[in-house]
Image (cartoon, rainbow, N blue to C red; front, side):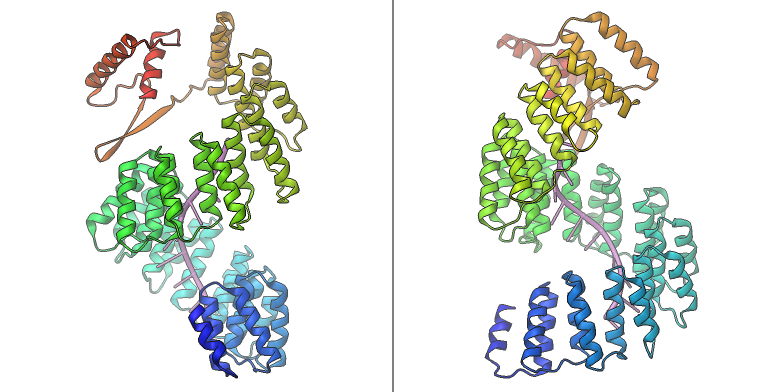
Length: 545
DNA sequence: TGCAGGGTCT
């Protein structure tokens, strides 16, 4: 665009075709402000817009959120005599629907001299955007012609409203289906977590493209089925008729991050580099997250440093990653670099910052950043930020101050906050606040036995065995069993899940023998187990391995 | 001029 601009600037008086070419170039590069700027320059230089100009400018108003300017451009449309142009009318409907001004959209639609199938489509899509699927369907029935795009939009409208039965009925009624129709209905089932139907449809599809695979893989990811994400990705590579793209890689990297699958993550990194996604900011961000969640913070920093284009999420991800790794000083230093780079932080940036302060025990700095977030950046603290503050105070041993913060919060504390407090109470062996935290946790999460276990551990640490027994009874009365916590480890080309005293692995015997050997070795080196129960020693050792 | 997927969060 900068070269195009240089050439454009040399033209003494550009004609409307040249201006339209520039406008389109800006719009294609998401430079909506430049579109508006050039449009206003054109007006001052008496270059008269034509029917190609307005759709580009109106769309930029919508995409660039300059809605007030949209109204002005509408006036220019009328003044210029383009009110009856079907292309201009269609874009105006899109503009007003995007602003959720369905009345204004409908007025334009009603005044159009000639309504083609595209005009009907954007009007129907407008109703769907305004969550009025009934009106959308009514118009759909009234439309004089229905092409495949209109059918697809109506089907996806039902899906967006969560009406899968209606969506499926309409899908089955379609006179023709293209790959996008199939992907749309597939996405509906994937989003609703109905993988049985989704997988069956995937197999039945007459043709698949990269979106079809991404719908399946993304559906698994959104529903927390990370092993299935990896399985489908491997199958995609083996089948070989469709290549993964940036969206595929991002979903797979995110699954690797959740599973700790570092080797596969590294493989995806190499694949991304050699398939043209080296400078892709989505992929870069996902790589930073994957490396930091898989414990390889150096690689995360390396990806960050090599990224030519960084956005807000890039900074948030690396700051959060460093904080998570206890490298609070680096996290804070990057926050200042971010400020120097003129990237405006958001609420999520501050979660990383506060987390960094917590892990360094920097209570005063944390408080100052919290205040600065409000005063200097006009970011209203959300419950997550109060959670960070409670965690900051509590982990530093300032339990009374933490409880005070909970009381002074403008919103009701949630289970995460009380659990953070309870966790800190264990470190500092404070029964009084632990009991207070548990009382509140029972109110908020009566079915979560993990809370009882936490307090029970505190009693155990203090040797209060009667209280431990009392809690065990209370826990049994809830009728719910605690789900055992589990860990994941990447072995060869797969990921193995295990929990304490787990015997599911085919090589269980060998694993426990090795563990025993290691325990002996550690003890002979002077390691003193801290837990009182023998089983617990194994738990602690296996998790630290 | 109209339709699909993805990244950060106590």
